[in-house]
Length: 496
Ligand SMILES: Cc1cc2nc3c(=O)[nH]c(=O)nc-3n(C[C@H](O)[C@H](O)[C@H](O)COP(=O)(O)OP(=O)(O)OC[C@H]3O[C@@H](n4cnc5c(N)ncnc54)[C@H](O)[C@@H]3O)c2cc1C
Image (cartoon, rainbow, N blue to C red; front, side, top):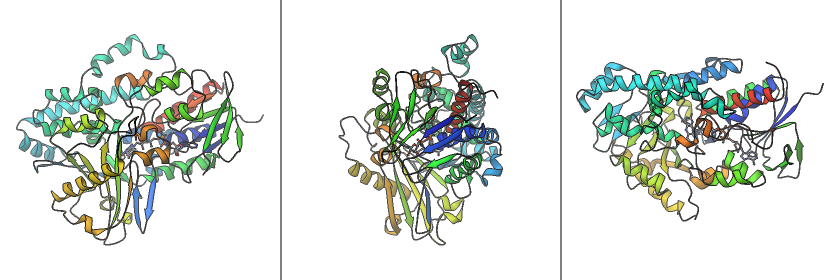
């Protein structure tokens, strides 16, 4: 019998993973990607011997990676050459104080007690809460597929309202553990990874800082793009076909079904199942006939964006750690400016990554490769934001922050610069509003309330990726790929 066929729109992490699971089950899978490379947001830029991860730079939640590589028939350690990064980040505060986040409890105790006497006990209690949130969050929310309301609204799940603190504000919850605003910031800034402000995020997200310290942050040799490469190896071994440089212009549907896709070069491909990995709001806006859901999605909250600088440097800054985070003292104002005003804060928190500290092959000998990321608002409806001006301001902020560490000459040692603004994110990966993490992760856009893996009307059209369940992030994109593939297999009536 001819195997059932699947077209995947987009070779992002979720798309590659779903394609691999489906091909391993004997389906004929073709992935159609608009860009010349796979990986989507997990992308790489190489120039003159400098290598930049343009999207993800942190391998967090290693237990999820382990489980997902296992589900694909291999092991994370076989697929990736990993080193643990410890201290994970060097945090630098406006008053000049620093905190190296580490799993070494003795070092944490000394550092925390010097910032706020008595805070180490608060830290241990916070970790215990993070542990509970992580275990429950993975079991009850992330690894679950909510196909019907009855999968989510169960008596058992009622207790999650207390145990996961979804209705408690994350930042406010920090007062139970710390008084010093620097410490409240040190263990909530990870909410930005969800595109959220800690002042609106549920306290559930304490799981993020917990997993970084308890399970570790890792760095794969060759950078995060080697995750894309490892997944591509598995996909090709399973027999997945890839077509690059081929934007899909339209998903052809009738009343109840998707029939195929039309490519921008005039070609048409047909399949039994279509799986869209391109960002879900973009698919509704651009590839499908508009309907009530398109309108609803327009009203949804989108995550923030970032301005990224990629610098090839003609000298080495050996004192700069691999991951440095500058946290502004006007922490709340930072998030309000980004999320409410869609702008650049007057004194932004920002992140600098020096990958050659972890893998010298990321820059030529005696030189450096630097990535600076400055969170900003996503694109506004009225297109008022002047991204050139914002970018130039953001660049100056990075130089000023580095100067506080005694690094005052970066500007004069830059051999070349590439930068991305929200406009670039939209153009490169079709991210609506240039929002780097897709739909935001507010309570009403999480779990059962996040768009599901299947279209409610077109029964053979499925979705995978950051704006679907379970949400943004590399490991969650892998989970999303597995869940979407599982659902397709179930609904095609293929037994395990
Ligand atoms: C700056 C930044 C930093 C990040 N940092 C981290 C981090 O440190 N750790 C972490 O875990 N996660 C991080 N993330 C998040 C992570 O990268 C994403 O959540 C994840 O990669 C999303 O995968 P996805 O499956 O949604 O696919 P996407 O990356 O959205 O890929 C979708 C693919 O579809 C393609 N496509 C779009 N439209 C079409 C079309 N019409 N036709 C054909 N193809 C199309 C796109 O080109 C793209 O290749 C970061 C993201 C960004 C942007």
